[in-house]
Amino acid sequence: MTIRNAEHARSRPMTEPPATVHSGQRADVDDWDPDSELSETSKAVIATDIGLALLIAAFAVIGRLGGWAADYGTILVYLAFFLWMSIAGRVFWWGADKLIAEARKKSNTGDRR
Image (cartoon, rainbow, N blue to C red; front, side):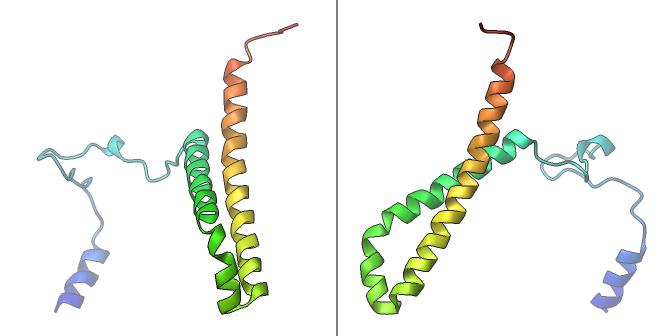
């Protein structure tokens, strides 16, 4: 019976916008844009933070690499560490480059000769 109800609910077109979660009022049509995306600056800040966190995690465990290499194999451990550092560094620098470019764009107000 619940499957039939779920199928019936999917087949009905939604004619009213969904209500907001925290208020008793109904949401306006303009409250939510399904095509909206984060801005480039927001993506850059998130990427920089995640990349920095991954780099900090890698440096926090660098002393354990020798023990892991003895337990699991030298090639596997150092290859995984290299891959981790490569991805973390790339994510960090992608975000940092975007933030630096945005800061330069905002501060570039004219000729500074």
